[in-house]
Length: 208
Image 1: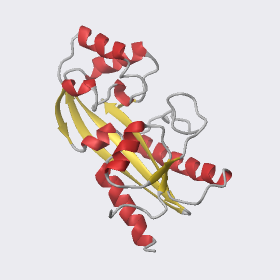
Image 2: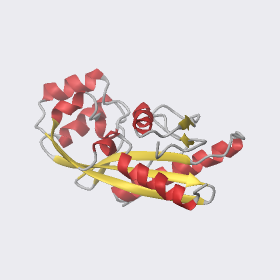
Image 3: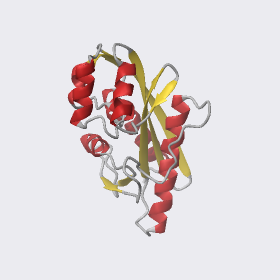
């Protein structure tokens, strides 16, 4: 396949959704997992900086995760290969909605998205030796107006746990989506067009 790399790459992410998406476009990869607290991909502080815009936030984290993955690969003396990472967040009214702190927080997030449009941003970063590139995918998603019962039932299902913006578009929350403009795979967690472009750019630098 065009995008398969002979030796594969390392995916620095705990997300099963990113694994499925990467496999979908025929990329060979190995998981590079980290000793992290639940809800964290790698040893990176995910706290937004004061006044940090959402696009800058996700790109900073994706790049930091790629760097951390590269260091971990070296520390473990693993065979050298490119490291791919990603980060997703939701933005509404200039606020960054990351992963909910708990069920109450998840319900509040969903309430703020109810009947409105928000932006989903996913940054992808790829590191190979001293080369590091990243790109941000932007998508606009509009929710229907959610009743208190719909929010409570969804939160109770557990699907909002550990999800940026407290929802998973590929799951039960699909019924909340009135409109999506942009990248469906980006909203899921790994924009495939942008990921493929990064891989091709890297291949162009190292044709052999």
